[in-house]
Image: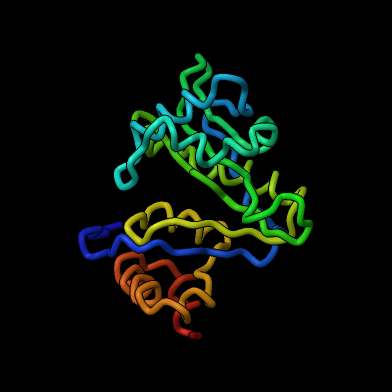
Length: 198
């Protein structure tokens, strides 16, 4: 896939999935296993983010700003992928959009990250399967936030049934422009079909 990231704006975009039915199932590749958050993993999470994140400044405080008010939920909602030898490779959270105590709140795919040493090994889709299966236990729909300069991640999200947030596109011209630019670089059939009907 020949994507020119330089033409894509660093605009935050929201993607939504109306239901949590028919979640695509992808197993982890050989040599990897999944586990849940355990005490001390704030440092593990931060180390993976520091190694992998090109667009956001990662500091030790980032973990606490994102999760510090809901530490009790982490053993149930934060996944780590590690090698069979126990080396941390990736992380994803099956979070909530705004209020975990609201049964109508959408689930949120949150902070998807793969360490550069383990990228292109087929970890992202199995992580998405795990997180979405967890979301389906507590939520009827899901959303996520990402940036237009992350087309490879957006392709995975499209493969999992997420689509641009139509209300956001109508309200923010820069978001609509970002999606149309993305479509020129990311010829995904679902994105093209969705944009043609709007």
